[in-house]
Image: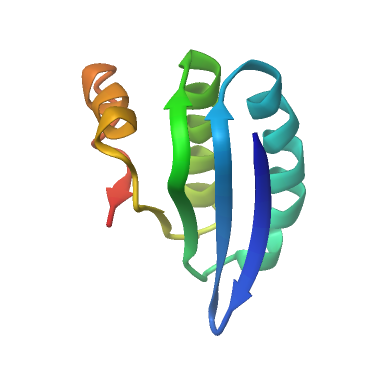
Length: 101
């Protein structure tokens, strides 16, 4: 998996590409956690349009990111999530904490 930050006017977007699993999720989380304070009180969009699959480690990384974002009043939005990936969130009962656009 790869990811890229896009700085937008008044917000930021993280574009994820590939399989959000295992080591890629563990690589993603520290980078995002270091960057997250830059977006305190601003929306942060996670664009998952190019994510084909997510596993439990990827879900865990998303939950940690959600918790950290809440602590600093950063609105976190998941955008363009494929139905198969969104179903994983729903089946794990983790779709409620996230704002899906």
